Image (tube, rainbow, N blue to C red):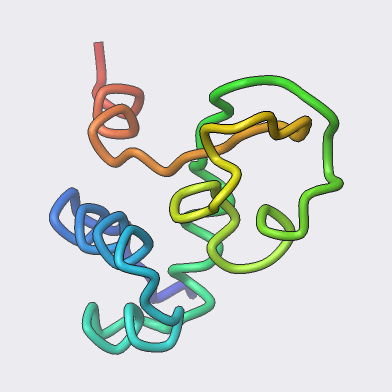
Length: 97
């Protein structure tokens, strides 16, 4: 039987803040008292595609943090698909109608 729970909105805000401050995956997991793998899967599963470009070529989106937040080329002429992790949009997406 599975013994896992969904992350709360507050935990997702903490993940977003940790990504913005370029914290390590392990540090974010420890602060939330969850396994770092859970944090990694959460970000990868719920990242939002901001602009379309060449897929799966950017090294930053292949490894932690899986998003363009903090990338030096984020607002410049980057030819790759851009991703972000936004807990507010995620909350709206998961709310029942």
